Image: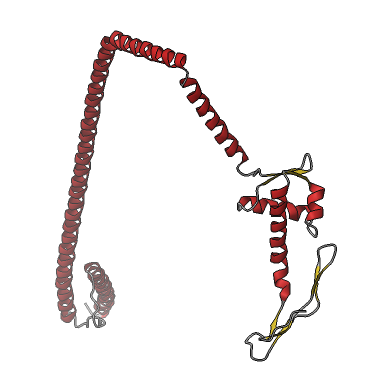
Length: 314
């Protein structure tokens, strides 16, 4: 039980069982002057337990070089095997612990990190090789032999360079010729591509001009057709007006009235000609009927005259 004269009045009692579970008997009750009325210590249990485990593992790694896993579990209780492995890996990755777990031998090696063990071994081997080379170079016989070998290599390199200088010069000239030829080929290809592009552009221009010419011809033909059709319509309208006038004159001579037309109605030439033809047919039919009636009357009169002639005395 924790007590203080400040804002903290009472504290909780935390107990840990053998299986690692914790139980809190009471929460901390604060005084009325504190802005926080109650504090639960359960939230600090897991971090504090992890810190204690890290401290214990680090102390063990400073004492032992190799430990059995069961011994570590006894020294760091209340953790399962998986939790303990996770703690060791986290500590090694963060540089707090220097351990390496070997589950095959059920042991933990201290002072060796599984994360950088290979890099450290490689570094040690490289340092060892450098020091061995330095030790060998410090020997007098090795210095003379190395100087002789160096001179021999330089002489061989010079003789090889002199032997191959003509061949290298010929190869350089040949390569220069090849480069010039490739450059000419590339320029020729570029010129050919430009010619093809210009030809395509000219062809497209000609096609556009031809299309524009056809469009203008079609437009001119359409305007000519519209003009001719308009002239024909005007001529037919004029002829229709003349026919209509003649028809009205003819009807006025025959004491007939022309049929009334609706306002805005325009008769075509064909309609007027059809109307005139119909009127002519009607007039002809009326004349034929009149002639027939006249012939019948003449027949009656001739017959009556002959009858009278027969009756008259001779």
